[in-house]
Length: 298
Image (tube, rainbow, N blue to C red; front, top):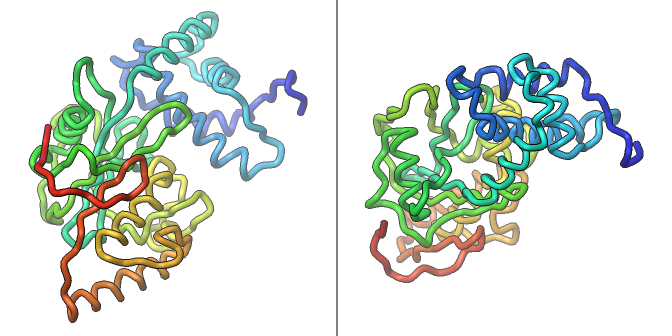
């Protein structure tokens, strides 16, 4: 397909994307078209990752072309098609100025991580996170968002230099690492109609790339259900390995969940019989470096 030709995304694909990301947006939020564009962007990422890669007759398109077809296909957006350029311009300006912060909540064994599922993005799991407010520090934003989404106060557990970070298509996402959260913690969303479900997942069960079918085998969920989690899994495994003193040639990058589990089990036995002092680590932009002694800060 030449660059000046526009493909028509099949109706069944648009139906699937709209059902996953668009039609469940609450009615009171549909008039905020900048907010709607963030849902359209998620649909765009999903389209590229899981349709363009798997179907030869579908090609990657830019966000403008994609949004146009979504707006034309979705009934409550059709009236805004003529104003799409203005809406996209406002959305781009807002997006570039507003990063997203949240947290990776780990149980005491580092074997489980808490994920959430939203009300209008029902088929995808992700980390609790949200957009920063004006004059709000990154850590304060993460603390607030985690409290709002799962009802957990992490202010005395999070450190401002211990996080995973990714730039996903121009949007900064930073997740602070919070350790030793009991598995029996009672989570409850503080905001209405935002989080539908919260659930602990075994990290070994989560996919680390889009063709990793581990979750399909162990959870009955395809990698599509974790497409916003996948970019962080290798860094998280690497962080856990170094935190627990596990070092290997793959350094946490293994695509094989069984290898990851084996290294964790071997490390557990080693530390059980030969206890040793463990060094805390800090994650800067996904790169792990030794950490100095520090106090929790807000």
